[in-house]
Image 1: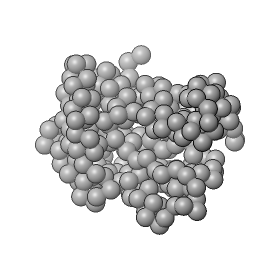
Image 2: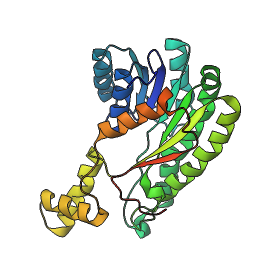
Image 3: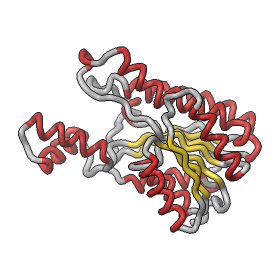
Length: 260
């Protein structure tokens, strides 16, 4: 299926591993040149090499998006390298999970700094270029914002705030010709999921296979998702075939979200 992404420039945050890496590679395979940022420069360059192997170009900048000036620096890189930006994928941001009563104020502030405020800064900084190109924003959020969980009291509220932010920015996008969508992954086969399964196994005194079986049963799904499935979904949503999908929050979670 031709998505109309050939020659587009896409900025992907958190692109060094997991979902972000898969998104960058999926977009490159559809014809995008990539601007990528994350904190690990070595992993970023490994990802960029795969983008180049797909026949596209890539520029990278390591940085911490919790710092207020990082977003502007990454957008300046896009301007210098390509002079334009067509797609912004806000993916960076993992929040701490665990017992609410052991969480500190700093844990909550850190969660909002990386995932919420970084998204806000990037959208603000990228908007003039996206408006000029008739561009697209895809916010990677998470199903934890739809269903509350006692061990996800930071990530859930952050995700819920991003739901509202995505809908609000879509209204501005209608005015300025920028299409905006959100994607809510469920449990995806990443290093983060492996760590969570290891914790379940340790606390329950079982092996990883049993921890995996128990977690799937608890979630009520048949399997965990794959990073490339999110990457391919993002490529579709950023492409011309999804031109009438605007302001939507798209769940990709294997059916874990059952609310209407």
